[in-house]
Length: 585
Image (cartoon, rainbow, N blue to C red; front, side):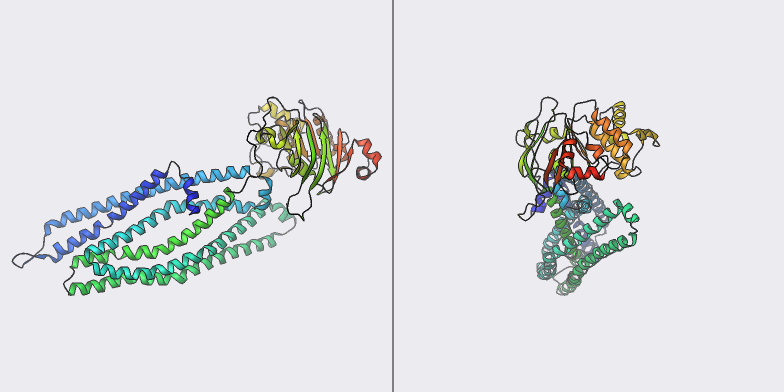
């Protein structure tokens, strides 16, 4: 099956150990039969005794101590072998889990923005945790237990045939009746467990959103509403679990009754054979001790089928992510610059839309724009005009669907993506900081930066506030920058973008949360960077864009007007109206 083949891909280097675990499982199962065999000898030769040539009953007590020792030794060996099975299975399962989790995470890091627009964070986290653990559980526990049950059943049947073939046939005639309910259950349970998995994902997504957005919830006094929403999702998850469990309970009594009836049948039929002098008391004792060898595997098989349905659903979810296509990739022989890139950028008839159906409108359409090395280009426009989309296509976070974008005269699709992105410093609109020290966040793009360089970059981004923090540059900031103001987070993000000394610096409304004085300081710093740099800036303040070499006004995904500050004022169009609103005219 595809799920098993997928898991097997990650078992390289551990397949021999896993095979050894399975072999040891067979060995440990065979050791189960030493006890009933010795018990048969104990009953027939010692307790009941055998008639000698003169017809006297002889009890061979000399065998008692050796048999007892053999029973104890066999049990010790069996448990030691079983211990080896568990250790080996756990080692394999943890290795597979680690490899799979690493591979999935690596693949997630390669997937483009469109993938994350489709999948929820809570759902992805469920795949990396609960679904992964289900696979570990199957390898570490279900695999050897299923093999043990199958071997136990087969070996028991074979042993029954050596004792009394007729009794073995009677027992075998009953087993298909027990298998039927388990078969029908397995056939229909997959959908139920798929529903359980979906409800878990929904609940985790709500929890993740509410935890990360707790400030918004408190600001709008929506604690009660969000608690009710989570309670509803939790209730749906509970109901889905109950439905799956109750569905199994419809089959369990039938399986359990028939499996337990095997013991009664074995004793009754065996008693008849003893009365007819066709079986010894020792043989009946051995059969009675081994009825669980048939009943237990059959009864447990339902539980294993239950777990396997969980396993198949979880693997399907993981495979869905693992095989999600990476739409933005390198060409076979990507371009790698031999020297520092200049930073020339050209848009040639570029168009892009997020939904590729015919009815959807373009987010940006027929964009033509030329930016020379060292220039500062500002992009303005109303919300949804396509500004961020234009920025995202330069480092190939999105790929142009029509037209092309050139950096230093080379189509960005032909660039090596790592090389392209290394020469770009990007401060995004949504500032993401990591739970680490301030200096580690600034040096994120280049961990080898020395302390002085980090401080220099922070100073350029008006980061003097950092030294006033409790531990200065060693201050650990919370998740997503908790504990810092919006302006402080933007300044750290700007310092991070500057720290890589990029040939192209992209700033997406990076100074929206800072005061006018700080903004002016940042603008002066950007105009006097200690390295040559092309700057593409999205901003809404005239103060941020008026000194740009070129100002681009966008509307509905198209370039409405373009030029310098004075030229656009003379046009008396969109830019002129914005200048009037902000008091520049």
